Image (cartoon, rainbow, N blue to C red; front, top):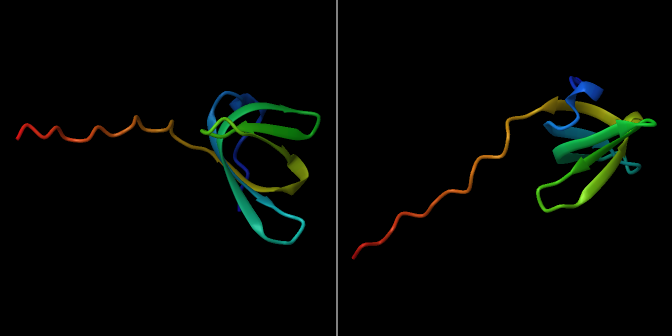
Length: 77
């Protein structure tokens, strides 16, 4: 697993995998709002803010912006 993000990626949408105290992994996807004092702050699409200590980050990368919502076809019948 590779961490391929840096402080320069603040403002970008990222995917981050972290190791939980249970030994399990958990993914966080959202906009990297800040990275300071050893903590990354990520805002998920639902508005939830997740603080992730960089010591538990095992993989991370920049991902493309969220696609626009799909429009359902109109029923003209």
